[in-house]
Length: 136
Length: 136
DNA sequence: TACTTGCTTCGAGTGCACTCCAACGTTTTA
DNA sequence: TAAAACGTTGGAGTGCACTCGAAGCAAGTA
Figure 1 (cartoon, rainbow over the protein chains, first blue to last red):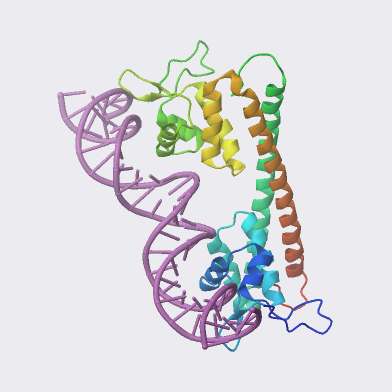
Figure 2: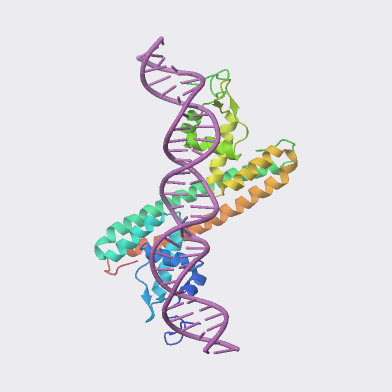
């Protein structure tokens, strides 16, 4: 059941099957295959029978993609970033810019959410006072 | 062009046309009609010929809905909240709970985004150092 | 060996939140 | 008054991010 091949002391694994990765990341196997199809994964190794063997590096990448996903970045943009990584060193500047733009977006999003929090707090405090009006 | 009917000194307006509301909220006229259809708007007044006339109160509600939307709350949940408001005072408790749940969600979301920000900062700092490796 | 589980592919289906269309009526502007 | 701009409706279409199904091959278990 386990695709083993542990590296020496077994603390890290050389590779994982798709269902193991699904369990670890919370993504479905379908979604993992879909990520590969659309170019969001760097090339994933295969076993001699053609089954995917995900590496630690792949898991790291998926973790990063998960973070980007949390920011609301469209998949197409993540694919763009993945392409830049594949294209090598001469795309470093473009990648850094992309990350910095994303960083700014995340900051703005946090600010938005903090504003929203303030609005919610005001609303909730209206509900707290038992003064009869019907807040909306 | 202006649906006028200003209240005394003209600082607030008695009502707005759909395109005025679209301009003010950033939502499309299509979306505003759709909101009404699905029950996300309290009843909107109509002119004698059947055209929508949005009130200040409607604008306030749309502002609040906009905030809820920023939190990622599904439209169905917002409709639920709108229903509770329509049902009157005896739904106060349920509404307060809904807002408090939303508040907790927003806090969690902010935390997530701050984590993501930290990851982005690390990535970006790797790009900053000119040590030749290719960050992914 | 038979069974169960998991893997493959391609393509179709789902749910959400809009977004647009067609055909027609109303209001404003020149 | 004529033209342009804006409004109405119901229903269909769009884009995104999955999500699932079908048919078939491969590996581990009783």
